[in-house]
Image (cartoon, rainbow, N blue to C red):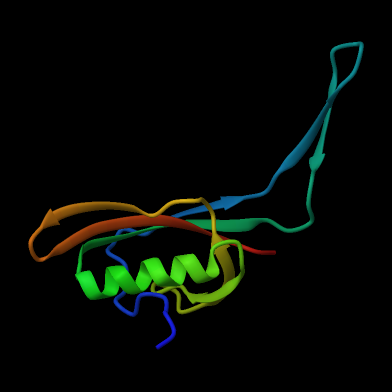
Length: 112
């Protein structure tokens, strides 16, 4: 069976950051010119699960292994908007918080 993104919605709050990079140029007279680096911003989310079951955690690790560095579709559970995203970092953080499951967190980033 192919690994899938967790079907259990993440725990709230879901941290969302909107980013739009800018370029800044300083001139000899001390003035500065600033402009947008890109025409479109992008979003980043930190997703957290409190007490994720072991089966779903192992499935998430398989999904991460198969899709890290690639894009995939993700539906924001708050807005129900579908985004094309990728894993932002090289890690999934996990804390075995109880015998019922693990606290799990990672970041994903919109691909403009």
